[in-house]
Length: 333
Length: 254
Image (cartoon, rainbow over all chains, first blue to last red; front, side):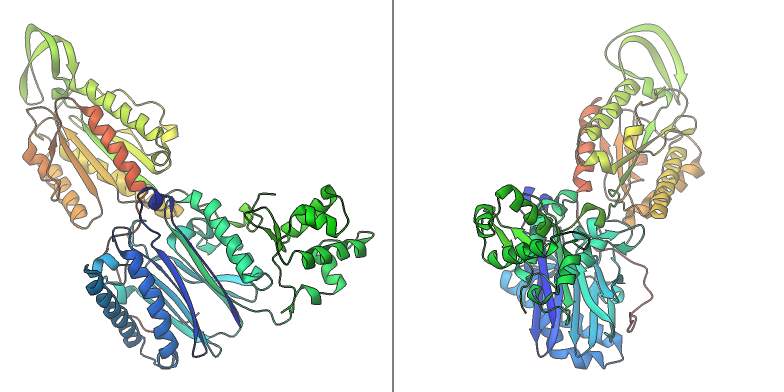
């Protein structure tokens, strides 16, 4: 089972010029195939957000239907041609509906499909595709920017098929894939060292223990508050991380595991502290204020805050827009 | 408790800001000493830069206005919160020979613009070749350090006809035209004064005709240039490019 998390935010530059977010992500689970996709609309193309939205949806549908056929076809050039032709044909249909040229719908495309212990990767244009294997974060495909940072290859470019990356293989120990747009690269991809930021692995690991909707909200908050300040471009990220079969929920963690989680190994009275953490997490499964929590665990607010701080630190609890706290870790699968 | 603990800053990367390398290739030949505005003839005449001139007092010379314009450009870049981190400027002058007045560096380190003196002939070809060499060298430095960059800019400003080495002039034209046609360079050819030869400037720019500066409005031009730098620094991918590729490849595997 794969946990999928995705996020796309409008860049400062597009907010200023009133252009919608041109980064789109999509995921699909169909015919036992898990697919994630990301597309970054061309900056100069006025309707590229429609193009990006279409190609992410269509590539997921296409790969869910054709996974086995593509995987067992040793002629990569033919597979590339079929994918490009299909997407162009879909874009042409859309251009007729919107009464625009194909170029106005231009975008890049990144996609990963997973089925029965196998994967297929597709990449046209900039952005990065990473993966995790044995707790190591690696890169599958690199950005295709050409010489200048504001140029790249798009799906409708005549260079699309020549420069497209197409990969397949057995998963073996691969347990996560991540796709990011060039806006997200600013903080998540080191261009000199050509490696991914450790933060990405952390997010993928968190998806194995955190409630997905909570993690998604926190990632969006991070993108809006932090990532957007470092670039004027739209930023997007989508990843799929395989569930950890050993983690059945917070309620099933042993006392020793909780001691490690809360860094209480050498502390006295840790059983009482763990009991308080248990109570808070159980109580805050629905959003609660600090007053309500301190009343529940019978502790003054100023001491209750210290517990909340620790839970925050460990990403076990989040704070909503109203300032209420909500349990973010999965209590029971 | 309004803070985001999800990702620590030390777990993220810091990439250098993509750069816009700009070379100002400036005519500092004798004719740039020409004066406009209220001036008084002294009655003396002299020959310089291929023509005869009348010595005057008062007025404002082209070279002084040019220097003010360059200083205004630097100030505008420093005051632009986006361009200040992306623009990198070098200045080349051409009179009887071509010189690097100010090499590429972070704009914060270029605190003083050296004086410009009007003297000698108009070795335009030599100046443009030097400018192109400096731009290429800077791009290589960016590549070596993993710094992204935008298409470089070459601003050529002259008030006369090139009278340097013909071979150097033709070589400069050929190099510039090739780069512009391959979308590797943006050229801004600017003609100053009434004696400028637009046709020789136009040869450097197949896509954009040379512009004639209105009077000595260097300030207006450099103000526009600084705004253009800021806009470029915020641009996102939107153009098709030609890439060196080996043809369609088959499958690859992790």
